[in-house]
Length: 195
Length: 170
Image 1 (cartoon, chains in turn purple, red):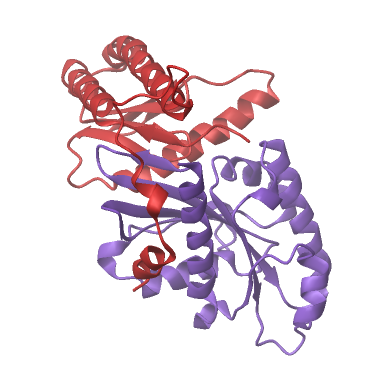
Image 2 (cartoon, one colour):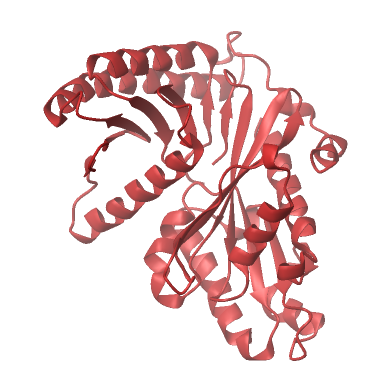
C-alpha cells in the first residue's frame, strides 16, 4: 500500500504489471525507462534468467513530479509470467496499489491470457484484495501482429467489468505511457479517497 | 482489505533517524537503513552517497518476501534474521514487525557486534512503529470520539484534482 512520508514530503506507490509469459510486461518497463528523463528515474533492476525471462521481478522507480508539495514516486514492478513461478507472483503483489494487466493479443495466447487473469484474481484474493476494488487497467499488447484478435473479442473474454483499456505495441511505445498515466491517475484518486 | 498504507510523521521520523544513527555508530556499520516490507525506503544513515538505496530497498523486501515464502513451506512463521556474507561487505537483515532493518558492515565490525546492537535497536524501533500505528488509527477515528487529534497536519491529498495529475505527465 502507499507510503506517505510527511517528513520527506513524499508519496510512494506500488504498481504491478501482470500477465502471461512473453506478453510484454518487461518491454513496457524498458520503454518507460528509455523514455523517462534521467532525473526522474532510478536504475531499472531485472532479476532474469540467462535467456532474459523474468525470474523474480523487474523494478523501476519513477519520480513523476509534485502534487500539493509532495513528491510522487511510483515503484513499477513486473511479475514473472511463466505459470510455474506462481509463488513469486504472489509475493510481488504484496502491498500493491494498482495493477496493469498486459494481455497478449495473439489468438494462440488467448487461453494463457484468461488463465493469467484468473490467477491474478485468485492471488489478490489470497492477499485480501478484491480486483474489482483496486485501481486496474488492461493493456492489449502486440496489436501490430497479423494474428491479433479483435478488440471486441478481447474485451469480452478479459474485461467483463469494462475497466479502462488501451491498445499497445510496447517495443514502439504505442499505448505504454497512456496505460501508465491511467493507472497512476486511478491510484492517486484512491489515495485521495482514503484521506 | 489488507494493511492500510504506511504514514510517516515528522516526529517519529526524527526518532527513527536518531535510532539508525545510534546503531550506525555503535555497531561500527557502514550503512543502516529501514525499509517497509513493500520495498519503500523509510530512512537511511551512513555512507549512502554511492549506494542505490532505492534499489537496495526493493531487493531487500523481495529477499524478505522470498525467504518468508520458504519459511511458510517449512511451517515456520518467518525467518526473522538474514545474513549475507561478502568478501568486503556483509549485510544483516532483521524483521521489525512490518518493516525491515538492514545493516551493512565491513571488517571494521563483526557479526557478533552487529547482532548485539541490532537486538537493542529492534526493541526501540518496534516501540516507535507502534506509536505511528496508534497515531494513524487516531487520525482516522471520527472526531468527537476522542480520537480526532490536532497533532497531524490535515491531509493535503483531499483536494487533489485531475489537473494536478495531468501536470505530473506534463
